[in-house]
Image (cartoon, rainbow, N blue to C red; front, top):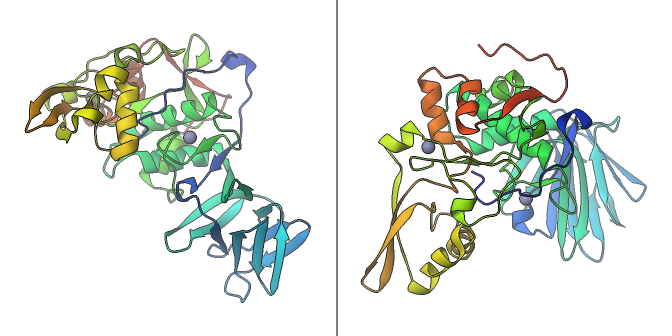
Length: 357
Ligand SMILES: [Zn+2]
Ligand SMILES: [Zn+2]
């Protein structure tokens, strides 16, 4: 769930003047601020890693199938009988194309990715960046940002939303386009081919939402509480797309309810700062400490008790409402038209779109 990224600085160019990016650059695993990573081959995919002219040929099921990369003065790369210092490392297939590989933060987690990997240093940590096929990034975010069992038409709506966001916000970060966190869109491993997320991306390939001919940096929320919100309602600046407050039957009839207790000091941020206050509390106390900005407050035993509905900022696509509409036989066009009034669904290029069964 992307809960904090209002992209108000959107696009300047109309869609007709923009070219389709085939790849996006995703900064991954940044949450760990890691000083050490392990790069390993995935399944049957050999790797070519190049660092300051030194070449490492990594082979599956061999003594040379992984490298250790540490942040020292520079990068310290060890493995395959060598240890070198380098400014950066680039890993590809043997013919220097995108390929599968596994990145591990020792003691934390391992993830498989597909793309071209570059690792640099910034401040005191490693910065792994993956140049990834745009459609694979869409499928990966659909997989990571939705829950199991979401109907396919709702996943397709999410795919168009995720793609529009990627397209409209290229270059959001200084050293890469997007991070893999809720700040941009959550991205983990790519979904398996044939999975619902992969099907949703393939069936909507190249489609984005536009408003007055320009791509929309589309927002989404896990559930809205009954109506979606506009940025102004939450004390946020107006976005280039004028988000509307639209009715959401699923959340109106059966909203997700929550209760939280905050100190008076923390709670004081909410009316003073609106959505930014909620996010400030989430950064301080955890990302679910105030699930939405739709609540009533009362004092109880020296605490401020919040009783609210909805999850996330409430702006744009309501994922819960989208799943409800899909279950009522709405297709992704109808879902997107409902949550994003006055927009169009347009292809980035004249691609052949798979049947939407
Ligand atoms: Zn980000
Ligand atoms: Zn809703």
